Image 1 (cartoon, rainbow, N blue to C red):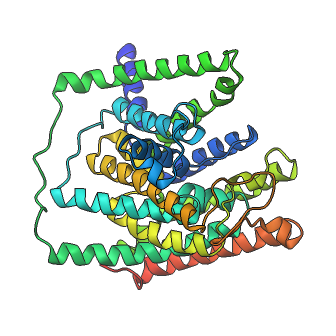
Image 2 (cartoon, rainbow, N blue to C red):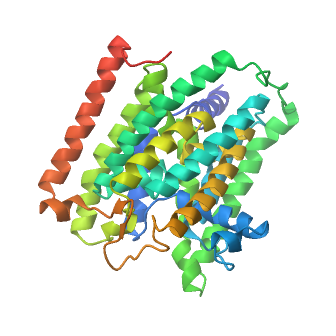
Length: 410
């Protein structure tokens, strides 16, 4: 009897930890810990640069590279920091979905593929203008004490509202392509095998990390930390359903605010802890600040916000849903990468953006400049006070809307 109870207890713990969704607040705190770990290693979290690399590779493959001015020789995805983290993020989400037997091939209605393509392209353009997506243009700059993050935040709010209004109009006026295909369920034997396959993948990723960490190649050793970091982010975001797109969309859609509050908590925890790292000169803050304040950040956030509503996910949210098996997000991810590559090339060709960011000094472009509040305001007092004041206003607006539904669009 005791042995059976012990086994039953193990199953209950497995169900609670690895099958049932985590609180988004837990996910937010764990995400911050991973981001701070990267910063302690002198790195920062970004997604768009890695996605653009895939788009650059595709443009070179189809012969558009020379016309767009894309370099013929590019980093391989495994050697590019952001591309490597993007791939391991997808693998982390895939592993979490397999362990919980929640991986499935999700086929949307045909019209959703059109929205994915249009939304992904808009996300690519928005990220090119802002110098990053919801990760590299909003979250990371705020952690790095840059007002560029707040400019994109405001653009994302406007874009989410406009995009949701436009999407609702299409649902009311377009009937074509709204019938979803029949689901593709896995057999019981395949479902039973999923957790074991996930454990095998986890072991392979661990071996990959150790192999690179013990390598005599300094470049491989420097990238070894990115494998578990990206994997952990994907695993955490899948388990907690953490998504920046939901944080900006849900208040206007249903007045639900839990995801938004989780992002507020993440920023409230990350910003002062990151300040300690910057004060100790553990990492150069300008590494994670795009030269786009304020025009690029605001306009990019607006366009990206509209795009992420139609695509059904932000950059990181699209990646972990790709790992979960959503075909719509694979389409959105492809057009995000391709649109980002084309948009970045055209912006550089027009002179609006620089070809390469100069990390040895401040960067200025026609869309803005690198801005770091402690340098602008002479210390950390005012930057933290301003940031926490905006977070408080955001939170109070959420509470007001949750109670009154004054700003919901449904």
